[in-house]
Amino acid sequence: MKFDDFLHTVNDFGRYQKLRYFCICLTYMLPPIMVYTWSFAAATPSFRCKLSDNDVTYSGQLLTSYNRSQPDEAYCKAHMKISVKECQRCYMKTTSNDGSAQIQTCNEYVFDRKYHQYTLVEEWSMVCDRTVFRSAVQNLFFVGYMVGSIFFGIMADKYVFLLSN
Image (cartoon, rainbow, N blue to C red; front, side):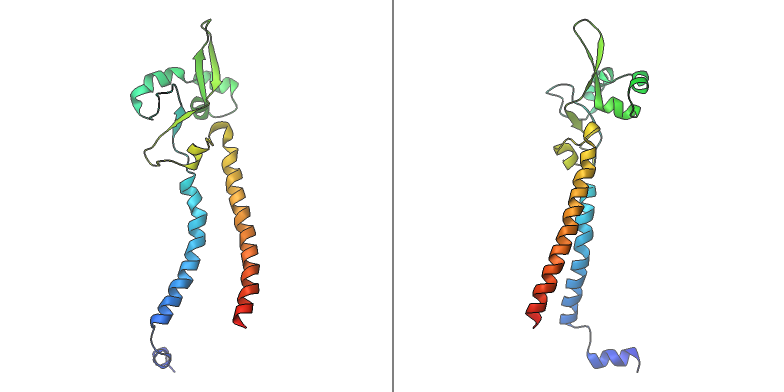
């Protein structure tokens, strides 16, 4: 018997088969969507130290004053154990009353909105010395995903079996 004859015997791909196919495809599409959502919701946009209270945009208007407030490349290489780029984004050079320059950790940041409007990294300030929290939050998500999969798998096995009898 050829496949076309068999298909004619069991009837064509009807409404029930289409509905079932859609439901199966939907259940296989949801887990990857949930997993990859983190890549977009917690993306790290470009950022820099916030210089003053009215410094709210990442544009080049304050670029000269921002460049003066960055630590020197030589200082970053000599005193910091991070890259020069990270040093200049996460630390700010200030001048004390006696005229000496001091390096301070930034407390607030200005983020680039070119590609992302607002991300979790910005909301929870997970940059510089707080980047470890990005990994912790992602690990916590996957632990919850695993526990939920086990729990709801057991529940589905138990109650679907009861409903089918």
